[in-house]
Length: 101
Image (cartoon, rainbow, N blue to C red; front, top):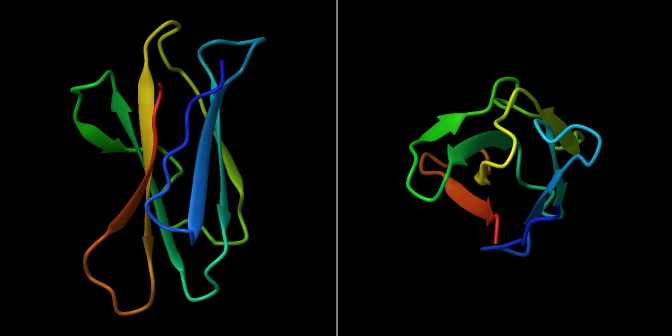
């Protein structure tokens, strides 16, 4: 299953793809085009109304990293992901969403 992609900025594109061989795993990939972005934090939302939570291993990601496997998810449950991207000195997060469609 491939999820729709929403990009609030041309600086970052985030995609989420459920693995076909293990439906409890989603591969989240991203591409950062803005060389000034230095802070990346990945968050997950279960269902359409769930709380946004940090993804284990998804905080303080390097811009050279391009993917993260999110494991131990519920098969058949819809998930959304958002990436907080910031430039040095920015206090407020700028989110780019990946929707489940």
